[in-house]
Image 1: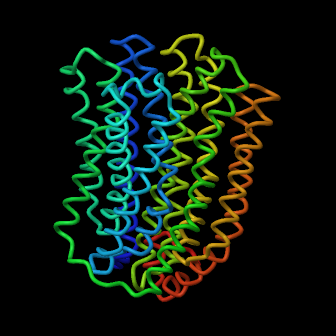
Image 2: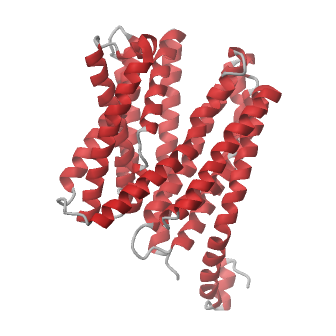
Image 3: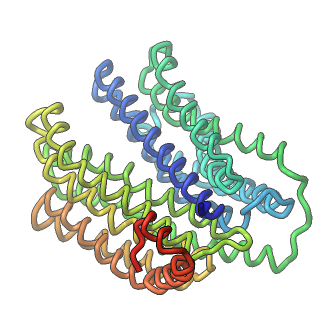
Length: 434
């Protein structure tokens, strides 16, 4: 009886752990905001959400490509990997200070009100601590994936999600501030704690060759552009829609987009897992890419099919003003199918350090997503935006499929000799007909 290749087994386990972590985080976040919305005024909820969104944008802008670099250059528990991970933590802390300071300078009193600490210095200090913590949380998650501590990946998310609910009930009178601190502070604390624990249990640092430092820096900066291109549209598209529709029209789009953002994290997480596993010594890149693609697309298809039933339920629960959720959701979530191809292609090309392909694919996606959505919303409102988002992802997915085509052929070609070596009963038993 054939055993599953260890690399594929680790990839499958890591992919499932990542998908579970994303799902729990999304459901926990939705439940948290839903409970808060039922108990507090809309202005309280909106104030906390706006500042948290701004904080996430700052965290995203200050990543410097480090999550991708950690996945690529810190693939194991060696002293070299531990050293580069500590460099990444230091770099993200420094960039976070700059980003948090910029947020305080341009944010204004209205946006920063939930910080509520008084004085520019204290406000900047708290904002800096939160951005540093959130940035560390991103790197810690990637590092745990590289070390294959899958239980820790899920456990960190569970701890953050579960702790929010009892703490929400015992908070101070300033509910906007407390809600913001719970939704931003707990993951930030988990990031700092995770960074400290990994520092303690990891081997001591060692000198790194100048060539390795240059390669690490170049890879980070190139993939920083790639991250801006691949994840930027998820921040810009809702803004493009918000500027061209009324508040009443935007409300159902925001609900549908919130679900879309969560679902789109699943292929992204699977791509991160693929990059981590492909970067390990001796890893069969083509075979792992094929398996990751199959898992990612299968999950995307299932979620898309589920949206046809979930959309009407959400519309019925939220009321007639949210009727368009049921029609927009399948288009928005359906884009996750080609998006899974794009994420797989990007992860594979990053594992090969093919910067040109990464930049071209992410640039194509960014231009297509913002352009098609902008044209769509101008022509057809919310539904036009949803269809534009779908078309943009299909275009990027088609280009990514062209990049992956030789990879898939190599993977299938490598498997065929294995199949041909099996006896006829074995082929019949496994459903393989040659």
